[in-house]
Amino acid sequence: MTIVEKPQEQEQKMDDLLIIGAGPTGLFAAFCAGMREMRVRVVERLPEPGGQLAVLYPEKYIYDAPGYAKILARELASQLYQQSHTFGTPVYCFEEQAKTLSWDGDAFALGTDKGTHYARAVLVTAGIGSFVPNKVAVRGAEEGKPGIYYFVKSLDVFVGKRVLVVGGGDSAADWALAIHDIAKSVTVVHRTDRFRAHEASVRRMMETVDVRTFHELKAVHGEARVEGATIFDNRTGTENTIPVDAVVFALGFKADLGDLRQWRMEMDEPNRHIKVDPTMATSRAGVFAAGDITEVAYLQQQELPEDQRQYDGTHLSIPSPKYVERKERWGLIVTGYAQAAVAVNFAKRHITPTASLSPGHSSAMR
Image (cartoon, rainbow, N blue to C red; front, side, top):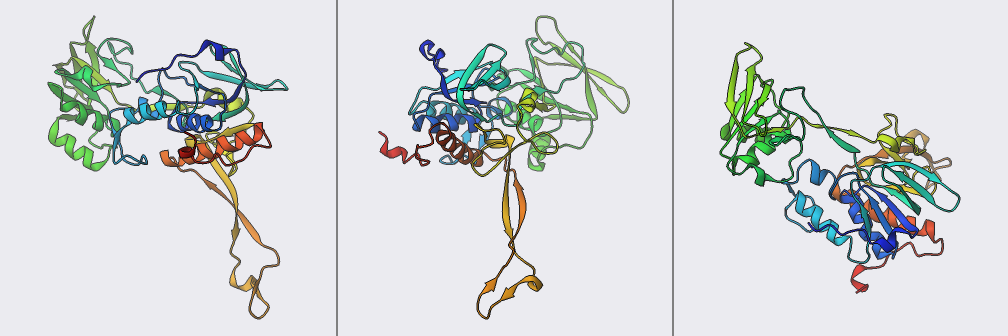
């Protein structure tokens, strides 16, 4: 994937829209904003676009992305990134963490760990937050050491290697099965005989690779690179040292919204999702949100019980309609796309009240 450098001449200009997060929703939002001729800046904590696609399962196939029968997650991220440049030149600020958001009277000021950006509107597409891998206190398994992987970006590093996978969830099963096709050997250790992964994946893994249940990792050996690992049976304490060239820790991730919680936007009870209305507007004027981070709230007319209905002979009369509040969370890529389109067009209307809400058809633009 080719990452476009930030044009220096755009650095000094006021942006129309600041997008927080370059996952699928944020990338599609950048495309939509380009259609509306908005000057866009995208701030992303990761070193590349894609969000969960790039971090959690880059080598897995996505089957519910419109227009593709199936597509690798990393390829979908690449396609979305390229698409975002179709009608505009969004500025991407990778490896930059959003910290504070304030209004100075004329624009929003977004403070990051690298500086300050200004824009007339803000769209939060931060997904489930920033990812921090769950770690274990195992000697020799420090993050950053050659052969130790808490994130897997490419399978190529495992070609011809002896690989140890630690974990029992979907990620562990998926990586074990994917690596098996190219590695010299794959061993999986899990502390119980109960797996959290999909049953079909567990069955294939048990039939395909060396799975050691009730086993845990005690130490990783090797100075300049991984050369072996000591595992032990947690029922008997019996230890065994096996030769390995790489260790993949598939123990899950902690997602944290961090400083976003302090941005004065109304959130749900666990302080996990941002409340938005059907226009994707948050409780803070000029700030919108879309994708996994949102909880859409709306009122739905409630059908009255039979004993409360009134008829005037042929028509049903409801003197006092009753409404109930509905809250929805979807967590689907396709929903994030739709919410991004809605949010961007209402952000355009917020910036320019006389602007049409409809973006028109892309096929008529070029």
